[in-house]
Image (cartoon, rainbow, N blue to C red; front, side, top):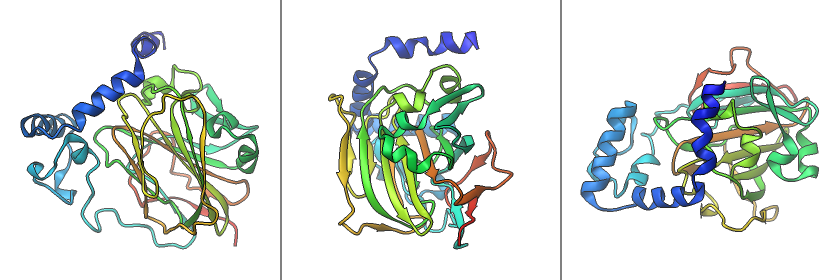
Length: 285
């Protein structure tokens, strides 16, 4: 644990937002030699499977970010068609999964964090207290688009400013309230079984988050929460539809109310999952 704390210390000292903005400029560069160099080295280092990419030729990508947020071939991620199935919103590893007890979610072994702090809205937090959550960590090698676990109608979205700590396991085990401290976007949907939250957590080097209905939202210099009301917009997203994508590795959290669903028993911390794979099922009619 002490070793992990020492390794995460630089994250407290570095100007997180400035570093992320500078990285964003490099990642968005359209210089052919630079973006090709970055893409080739990234594929080699992280063993990226380009066979499943919609565009396999790296020369077709205009920037490193264009490659990083690449789409997959049609059918590369089958969506579980069971009407009651709740599917993974992303490729990645389950960081933690379980129930929300006394307004607390598990961040790592022996380390919890506040639901109210996560969504920055006490009334909203009450809707999910006693319910279920799943935290999916998207490593750099993973497909970086986040999709709907079930069909829903968009109700609201909040952009909550914050830090940009890394969200890997080492940081989750050492930084208190990590996911409630980092910059994030909270999207609330109405489903047949009650509300659902899909939360996209920013991280170190995540220069921005792109939402399907709102475009790109960059890390804010202002410290106030920005809310959008979509209750009268009739924005319906089917299971498997894209919610948004990260400009670098990060985390997605999904929340469900109490007494509406259960997670599959084999879905535990450390389990690798793919977008569209069943994580759990609704228990309500």
